[in-house]
Image 1 (cartoon, rainbow, N blue to C red):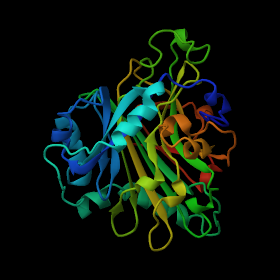
Image 2: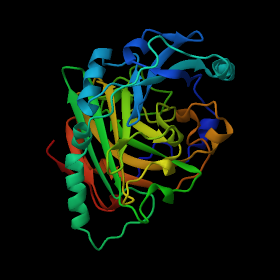
Image 3: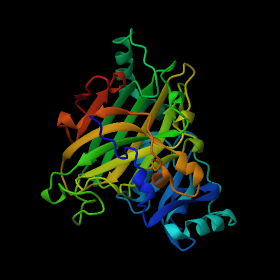
Amino acid sequence: MSTAKKPNDASKNVQLPESTRYTVGFDEPVSLADAVETKEYFGYPVKAYSIENPEVTGEFAANGAQTVDEFLKTFEESFGTAPMILGAVIEVPRTELDSVAQQAAHTPIVEEGAPFVADPVSPEKAEALFPEQFGSASQARSSALTRVPTGWKPEYADFSIIRDSRANTVKFSHFYMWQGGQNNLSQLQQRFGLEFQIDIQTAHPHFQVDHRPNCAQGYKEQPFAKNYDWSWTATANVGNGLKALPSTVGVYADYNDLLDECKKSSIALGMQHPQLVPSGPSGIQNVRLDIVAPRGVDDTGLFSGTVQSIDNTWCNTFPSMTLTDCMGVAPGTDGERLTANIANGWSAPNKCWRSEQQGDIPAVSYAC
């Protein structure tokens, strides 16, 4: 039943990408409009701009399907404010990573327009981010009063995959709830992080055999969403408003797909230290993740979903490595939490579904 992308993926320490990513931190936040005026740092192109508001973190893809104005509009619609940009993600040759990191450590980065301070997230917008999920989660708790969940796996999860044909994008929305008590992220061993992923597939005959990098041309573009150049946001609801997942959690876009099947793309966000996700007063943890990816060639495709635990020790040993490359290199896992089984035969977009009781019962789809 597993759809894990990196099951004890120790072979990643043998085959690593020729290029990797490095985040150049700014001394003070700037607006997105000011940030995008700078296209490169230390001679290397910007791939994304890092968002660090008090209530939400994320990235705006520099070459994504959304323009700056389109992203600002959707961000305002979701949060009632504007993104604060506190860094730029550049792509560098792996052999140059240490040199770039040393340069960045000794080079103050103060962009024009700094400091930019955005308004707080609107309470009304914050509440609107979770209404259906909270209602379903509440019903799930009421219908299972005798159940006392334990461990790190989220008790409840809710998802949607929606295409915006006008913007040529596909939006993946995740909501996760840990019930508190003995069901919380602190139950996960410290050596493990998590990856929250939806694996999408293409049925095109050219991509049904073999694994990356031995794939026919166009394998990254063929599924209904592209696994590159996507923007994302992450936030937690702590009961009295939103709170950004702190930098110590280490949220990252998981683009490393070196060993995946040619027919599959994994659209995933990871956390190096999910144990540090904030809780509400009652101990409940609520996390929302949103990804806006460029549309692929396929109209629809089969998909599955999972939350998998992977070893994070390489990231501590090699702190300059980007998290998508160092997470999961060392072997070991603390299990996974299935959120959508490929055996369901579900296709997307458009698709909405929920998964209760830590994935021990089948997920249920509902009208979007």
